Length: 224
Ligand SMILES: C[S@@+](CC[C@H](N)C(=O)[O-])C[C@H]1O[C@@H](n2cnc3c(N)ncnc32)[C@H](O)[C@@H]1O
Image (cartoon, rainbow, N blue to C red; front, side):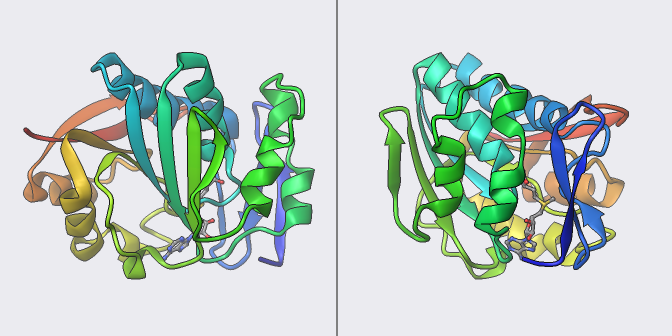
């Protein structure tokens, strides 16, 4: 995926600016802060608090691998089993991944796991540790077959202004079907039309404080 630009967000962690989509991969106010707030705290921890110890996560848009990396670290700390599935149409290059400062920013020694997220093969299930298995697919979400039941969806697409097609009913009804009851979709996006769509599919919406300077984010829970 070229060209794109590496830049520092305000919490000191890197993000990428995509020329193709004219958008940043993360909040410019803090990439790691956003990922922890939206996906780890509102998604992973919330499911953990409900008693889940074996959790299947689907991420829309692997991108830099930041959400996958933080989830792997948390799975090890929480002593749980996470199976992580992600799709990506335009993978970043290995050299772009090597330039990202995530493990130094989260005070992890470089165990090579962050790099491995990018170097491991596509479409295979890779066991990173007893706590974390990972599969990534180089495919558009629209073409992906959901054949595993999901507990959490990290919905990290570019905003509706950049890719409106990723915030519409066809994809979201497929995701809703793939989600287990009591499972949840978390996203930074709190646009009215998207909230209405989620409600119309049957989700119960929980409006949470957004990350950084954002007022709101969404956790959509599938009713039992
Ligand atoms: C906002 S960025 C995601 C950032 C990523 N989660 C991270 O932590 O770096 C959105 C990602 O979705 C990817 N993407 C765009 N359209 C897609 C599609 N139709 N299917 C799968 N991935 C797509 C982009 O290439 C980009 O990497």
